[in-house]
Image (tube, rainbow, N blue to C red; front, side, top):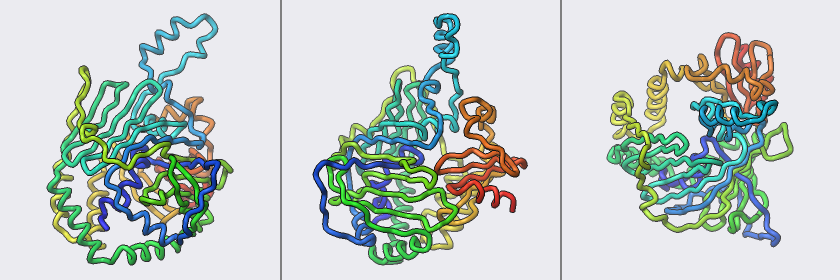
Length: 400
């Protein structure tokens, strides 16, 4: 039971979309698979998928404004369009919204996106197909590339394969020392059981394949999440779909699904990237402090104490003027992230535009930004509280 593959194949598609999630399509013909328990389904998900490729669709209905058009246009294009518009039609010209980490996150979270995904032992690649452009993320055992065609911009960096091998070996040793796969699943069920109810849902078909449903329902009374439904391939155990339902809406809030998938090893050339002519390339180098930290922990056994120490060191290292210090309070479905302030590059003026103003509400102690599966409170003191919990609970926690 290798840590590197236990959930890797199951999470490639959601990882590409920073947050991400899925829906299934029921066929005309019924599907009747052998009955399984939640434990047996989790065991099935521990399968070893070594290669696949497919097309994934992500759709969200969480009330965020769709920004693909404005975020893909340059200021010159907006100005040129305004000049050519007949008098009186100026309101039809899209207003440019500066792209940064926040607006790109909103863009990916809102509306519908299609991507192609490829994965094998040689690497992984995700291609997000925008309306007027394309973005790529390529990761191999030795390097990574992130490319944005609309900006003709790419970021690349090298990966220390020796260090990664050491970390993986340590993790595998830790798992082998800890328990067998079945015992690990038992421990997971015991831990999840305190916060969630796990059941097996309806047999169905997705991406042309038969699949089970793993249904996870929070026990929390303050969680915004009603349930999370995972479609699990009946043969390989790979997650082919994920649906997130909110307690405030009867429709699926966030969904991602494989429209098609092939369990064949993709051509290794897909993981080789050469920037097109005219691309600005930035070479990313890991901070010396991070490199030293990885080397320090690479040869240590992954005990509970060393993993907690690593988490503390990473949290301390992450503090910077661009990214304020943060911490998590609460547990499981009631977890809330607290930041001492907004990030330095956060476009606060964006929240005052007509595009976002309808999503903002004045509450006791601050201003809240709400969606069916997430609430964010910007307190009067400048602190930020975010979690998949009710607004009343968030306000209560902020006041404590």
